[in-house]
Image 1 (spheres, protein in one colour):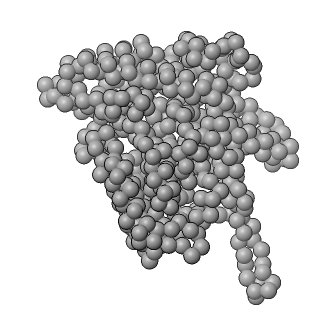
Image 2 (cartoon, rainbow, N blue to C red; image 1 turned 90 degrees about the horizontal axis):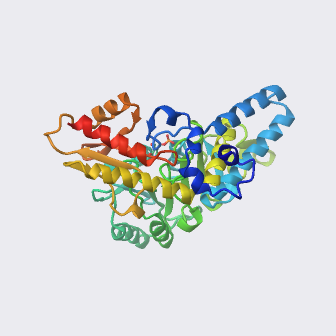
Image 3 (cartoon, protein in one colour; image 1 turned 90 degrees about the vertical axis):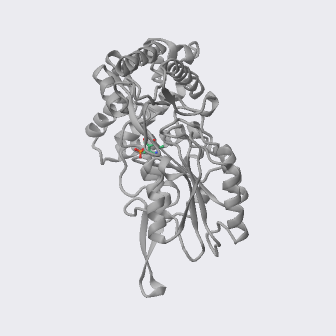
Length: 434
Ligand SMILES: Cc1ncc(COP(=O)(O)O)c(C=O)c1O
């Protein structure tokens, strides 16, 4: 009954979604929960059965109707519109700001390679300390800074990954005084701040709203890697005031691999020359008055960045997953996820000589819980070995880099996990360390 209600086809008025999250029935939607303690949702989350059905339904319908027929083309167009609308509910944006990609990485590269960077105008990029950042939100910026000879500023960070807002402000003020002006035509210097919304290693949530305000006051562009937040905590691009945001379908949204979203406000799109170009994204014409000069005209709206056909099965699957998590409610998901994370942290804290990473304050972290054994008296201190041993016991965690040469074991629980699973997982960890 609950499962049917969550598909989004029937009415759920009488059912409190939080009761569904807490009930066993939610686990029927995720068959992995019958066999394993799956807590690697910060890498790839399982898709609910309803999403698998939506993908197969789409493929069957497309194949039966003829994938290139007008009726299936119209169906695909309506599916894409539906997904765009659902994304507006997820991150509070406009439908025309939603571009379909295959991953977070792709979206971030649209920005890094799309801006017309120039050394002459003293353009620069500001990132958090690079060693602590996910490669997806570091290497594209490092690469473009090397290629274009522009400055890459790395903000100093503390052990949880936080930086001083004052340092950021001072850096931007210095640039503003030197003529920072994000203006497409006749522009001064372009500065872009890029930030993970939440950190993949410690789960720390960054102060994106404060950064958005500072960026606006200083006419800097602001790009967010939201791979670790959309689907797990409330995200509001209007409140944050960012220009760009990238996230995948296949982490906290529980959607299919190979689908992602790039949010780009209409105003911010003017700063980007599309990284890819081809059919669907642009047209070619000839200017008779200018000696038959060939003219490229980019499409308006999201199509401008969507060169070539998209992953339509992925669109169908993501639409289904977004519908699923919106029915549960992001605030309910957040509540349940934090509950599991807190059980993990409390149980781990009972083991001596374990360093638990990330802030103590639950408002400052996602459900990611990372730890490193710090005593040589343990039989195993290597986090990779601990992760392998856990997997031998059907418990799926991951190993992640904490920067400065430190590694950690990472648990990333989601709403279908239980407190009992958290306790059981830590019991195994204790046994492994003995
Ligand atoms: C913070 C962060 N950014 C980017 C990525 C890469 O995501 P994608 O595979 O969607 O490119 C990850 C993946 O774990 C991540 O945690």
